[in-house]
Image (cartoon, rainbow, N blue to C red):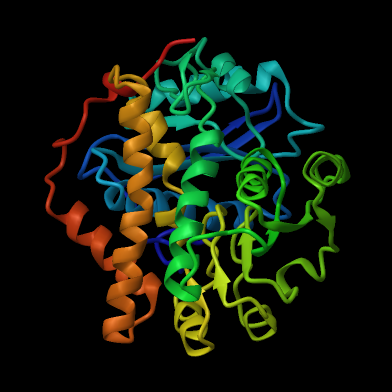
Length: 366
């Protein structure tokens, strides 16, 4: 397994591999950049087919967090962790505790939050052995409802706001009634996004690898089920990938029939050049690290004592950020992803190491 010569290695500051034979834990932590502050990013648990697949994912995801936090104007760096295993079969309390001990050994340079395959209770178990977990505090959420720290509601709401901005730019529509949206992945974030869209009057098609998730959307939201093979290629107005990344690639892009791609999944582009492919096909792409920043915004404010109104107002700016990206793209003819990258780089390159919020301001004990 190559690291420094890996195609996804982007001058990452730190990479650690952790194995605990007693619990079966195999994990990788990647810290990409801490120029704006400590690296904060989710801890993902997924049954990767190979170690190489896990390494590729954590390198891509950690870099994406740097760009996401910078574009959202947060004093945070970018990091991510992955646990190799099936969260429905392999997850145990002892394994989560072992992960917490490894996080503590990093001294606060990386702070873990919830992600695909992990939950707030899992992070609280990790928190028995580390201060460096976030998004687990009971409080009033950005929407005024009680929250246990789960960032999914803010991620879904921010994605909804960004999707509205994309529809306004591409279709010149402010009203979403009758808008046709296909959602790939109907878990914590995808289901909440679907609910926002349903309340706005949109028509929904959904797919998820877990049948119970898909059935819930059908039963509660009146969504129409679709197959794994069809969900991205339906003749709808918007495709919203909300599961795993790299779904926009050489094979899928030529088959897309929707004029807009706007979803909550990270690293939607398999390679940077797919940004150009989307532009050339006339498809408006809402860069994933811009549209799905609601969760990291919510976690950032958890330990600052900010009011729910402050958090919601910041999440609402996702629409403004995307509108700026779309407008610059229209004026210049350059793809939206490249423009979003440039905006983020301008922001994190301006900071010097250690200029951001101290790790203890974001850490939360269990």
